Image (cartoon, rainbow over the protein chains, first blue to last red):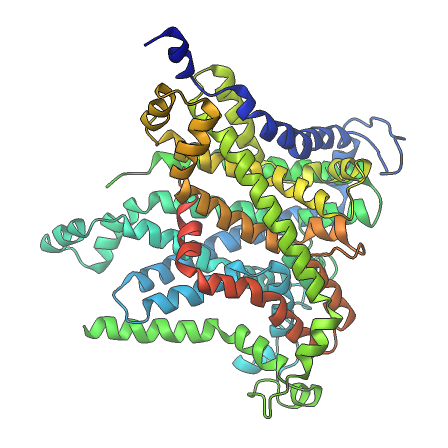
Length: 291
Length: 270
């Protein structure tokens, strides 16, 4: 082999990555870095008139009932969505994974809402959550709940519609995980006298760990960033009952013109997402086993 | 045998309950206002199709579908081209700097876009791209590149180098080896990239609201949002608008459901 040809077999040139890097830097890196800087200023969004205010925005945030409430709401909503969406998703996956005649159809039905725009799903559910006792969910169940208008219920109602839309997403990821569980392991466990629950606990569950990791990661990050559904269904109301970090930072920027403060709230959100990602990457990976 | 039968009944019952909102959506879209207020839960009798014609025009769904299609297709082409080339480099480069660059791309998956939302809005305004297709295409290409690069890099790393090497020994350049030999081998992951990004871009709401609101170039979710705001009390009309707005993507999903579900369930291994 000549030296010319040998050099050709080295890695591809940097030029291959250059266009992607330019667009990525322009659209993501530069704006995010500027956002971090703005979080320490009092920028109003008009012109370049701003001054550094140190940690003032974060001090304001701690004393701002709407913002601190939104942190609590965001965390509650995230935990509720994470637990219920994955719980329901797992049950659906175990059900659909059995040899049912309707399994293909069931899979399509439960997954379908995932591909629809969250704003449209929120508008649909806004009607389903009608306070009228003869219409929507109330009419169906014979209840008289003001799902989105009662401050003690509204946040859970939002969680409910998110779970309805995305349980099918968790389901298909669990299903992919279940397909990776070898049938022989189940048979071996059955011969050893293991019951249905024991087989799930000691055979299926450990092998599902990668699917669990992915699902927990997707649902927590999705929950933390949740915006469209809240914006369309309640816009943070009643009062501040369903305000999340995303709706607060939106209002601070585009309703009140406090761009510096808004990016400070965005930075808090970014830190939450980063923390969750790190925890999940390091801790959940540790308990994964392979078949 | 008996147990699967029982399970089947339970699962079908769950599916029926799950479909209640969809029943509400479709049945209300087929009712006139009197039926909606008097018998909100009943089947439409007789069904009326008047809402659909009105909703189609009032929500400007024709032009919005064109806008959504142009923006989604162009962004996908850019993402696949830029993403696969970059990933080929990142998967094959042996230097520390190359690895650092890969990590830099991964950072973009974790960063919430809200952090850079306002500076980016300024930047896009400065470039004169607010209210244009080009602005949205640039946005989606940038914002979805990290995830695209991540998927492609993982796939290429698992691919033997021999194919490209053989082509290069035969005298092909890196460019030819990639476009002629490697890229066609990436078809499974290109399918995943295509599906996940298409669903995200088609349904994305906040940025198009911000960039395109009032421009006449609104995408479907933004048009539907404005339409619902305007006719909020006319549930039949609003729901006909929602049915029409959701129909294109639901139709594509039903036609390609095996691939779509596979894309969603396999795309996140890593």
